[in-house]
Amino acid sequence: MTERNTQFSRGIKRGFMLLVLIAGVAAALPAINGREVIENVEDKPSGDTMHSLVQMTLIDSSGSEKQRLIENWSKESQEGNKSIIVFHKPASVENTRFLTVENPGRDDDQWIYLPALGRVRRIAASEGDSSFMGTDFTYDDMQSRDVEESTYTLLREERAQGRDCYVVESVPKESSDSQYSRQVAWVAKEIWVPVRVDFYDKQGELFKRMTVSRIERVQGFWTPINTTMKNLQTGHSTKLDIQRLEYNEELQDGLFTVNFLKTGRP
Image (cartoon, rainbow, N blue to C red; front, side):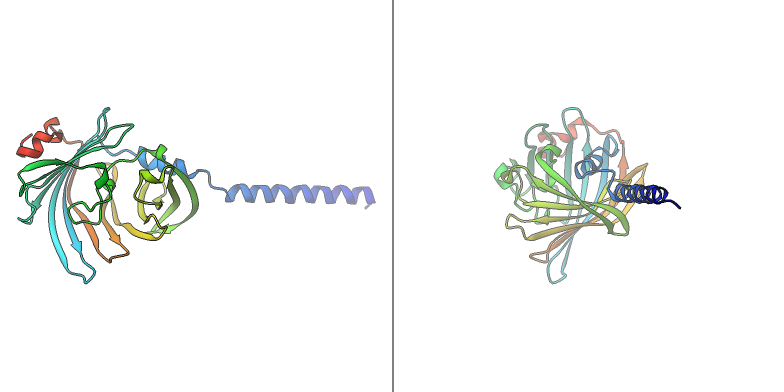
């Protein structure tokens, strides 16, 4: 083989190896970014309405449990989503009612009716990081959050809760807009359901962890059936187990009003 042919052959090999390298790098790069993952979570089909009966279990650090039974209705509308929660058991919280009305572009409105007081109380913005009815969820956790309020980074891909997931970090653009410094979510691929979310406090320490141990497809919608929120700093946790669920049920608009909070009648 002549020197010219040898050089030509080496050039072909180098070019081939470069193509292989480029193809390998391209294959390793994710075809989606962090924001797109969260947008898919927000945009996944969830029905126009939802009505559920939920067993709530409060578990303290020693393992002692308290049981509650709650009923939840939610409805999507062009003006914003609305939801109402009614406590049925035990007697100490019976007929407590909680209403959230989403306001696109500004904070949600929230009200609570406490039977012992016999009146409706509006939840102030300053109470956002307070516990909701002694659970490990805060009033802010019960609110919607605009995708535009945070920046997102796709950290990696890995398995969690038995599913292949995208791991996405969310950091609020304005630290005053959130009680958390950041959140890291494990989002199940293709079904777009977060199966684990780690919440970090203002000091950057791991604060709470939400895990979903069971997901089912109900009426065509992927739905978390068993969810646990645990405060990793206190050891207290709250479990939510859906007992009954119905999507796209006809719901009266009167359910989602302050008047229903007062009277219990739509």
